[in-house]
Amino acid sequence: MHQRINEIINDGIAGLFLYEVETLLMHNDGGKTDIMNILLTGGAGYIGSHTCVVLLEQGYHVMVIDNLCNSKAESLKRVEKITGKKILFYHEDLRNPAGVDAIFRQNEVDAVIHFAGLKSVAESVDQPLNYYQNNISGTLVLCEIMQANGVKNLVFSSSATVYGNPETVPIDENAPVGAFNPYGRSKLFIEEILTDLSLADKAWNIALLRYFNPVGAHPSGLIGEDPSDLPNNLMPYVSQVAVGKLTELRVFGDDYDTPDGTGVRDYIHVMDLAEGHLSALEKLASNPGLVTYNLGTGKGYSVLEMVAAFESASGKQIPYKIMGRRPGDIPVCYANPSLAEKELGWTARRGIDEMCADAWRWQSINPNGFV
Image (cartoon, rainbow, N blue to C red):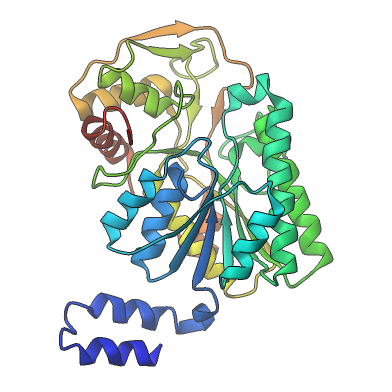
């Protein structure tokens, strides 16, 4: 590290590289130099690509494995444009042990952030075997290869769906778990697998991050959420209606026990979520064993409240049609994120207006996504 700082100073443009020097110094504090080479599975996806930006801007070296089944390689090219830094990309499926093992043998990997997995609640109800086979089998292969290569730092992309239909809100990490759909159960099963792994081998450091509902996009408008098919999540659906790609929003249920009858969720800006992964990596450097954190804002908004906020941000009217309840959905879900604030020093900083404005900027600049 000292050699790199000397190179920067000797270049005679120390002011331009001051940020890089500060980053290098920061990651030399508290043992952080032990975790600098990060492999992201599913890193070309929505949350993964935004996390790549945050990591690269903080001086980490980033590698990505992605089979591109619900993402596009173009997202990583745009990450490189945003950051001015390169990503080492491997088009590979986690269920191919030989291919994944070769990647680990060819590279120095200090930690893995595991995003890869199918993620639609509705689709999981129709295709449970596909979700269990993809999400769980891929994770087992990944963990076996990590162990074989002596890599035992892992941040896992879990989900608030592991809480099922919560008895009370806000939800803290000690709330009962019991997922309500195959997608959520696949995440819960993986959490249990990783817990058993941690109990069997204390050398593992694992952070389970239970996301609430990611929305928004990078403020540049260069990367954002780009569903491969009809959107399953609210914000990309609303965005595509606003840009004229879809005719109307389908609202699934207006008879829940909520203020306006529509489902209430904790929406978190994707950049806040990405920064949560940086905080989790720094936590792993302290050798915490197994830790679990909610990543959310602690506030719940209904579907119709989000629609109104998006209309205000975009200046577009969003026509919608009330449909019946969707299988696997629950009425209300929002986080108690206080543990992450206490132990990670992390808190969501961006509000609903910024979420909607950034989502609209992305969609209006890229009406057809990355195509």
